[in-house]
Image (cartoon, rainbow, N blue to C red; front, side):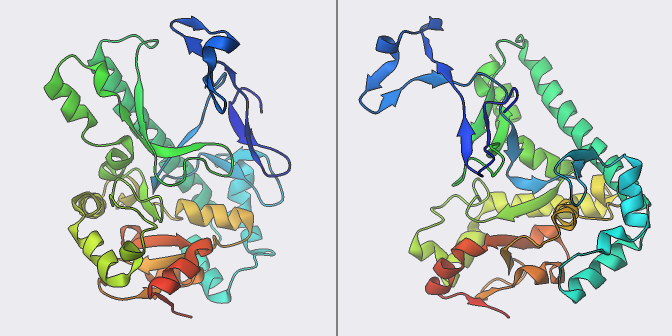
Length: 324
């Protein structure tokens, strides 16, 4: 697992390693750290990746089909992959999805260069936001803390944490400054900057929808739409994306728009669509779930709410219908 504390085993299991936890300011003894018969304090010894929920930024690197090694989008092999039409080879997707992708890619090397440019912009945008907060804190790197909030799932398939992130309020002595900085997560700030696209995936919908995603009453279409329409945070997130598009920010740059959505690049690499149904947020009140291959019929990503196929039965039981 290299220098990471969490990861994925060769058998596909999420695994991790840990050290004995602290007792006070020093590593504790076994006796000090065992809380009871099923609880012990440990700490993680290496880095932990955190994947931001609710957003999707362009990929700096990703494996070419047939390889497990990550390759920078700047690598000429990615440009050749698109320009030569190799991206279509053995791509087992519905023909209409391939046609949609062809209209976007047009066998251009520029698709790879474009994705790399936008990935770098997204990276610099996040770095700048985090550095600005850090400098306002007057804390050392050893003292500086980040606040993480999690939704239903807190680990992805590669062992990364899944969450929302902002500077911890305790970093700032001025309460007003702390409130100003921590009001929005970095997830939301990337949407405002236009450097990431929204990627709303149920049940990991907090803080955009603050509710129990598995409560039967929240799954019923009528109550679901009441929750969606009353969610100030979800409305703000969607409006911020619309505002970024109107202003031509980031991925919506009028002279250099992002040509391929990040999740599209990933499923082209993996040669398969994500198994996620889609709810169209533009039409409140309906009870329809679109199949995964219909995602592009909802043209703007802020209008899509993805539902993993594993939860299809729950939605159907609550009154939703898959529109085949």
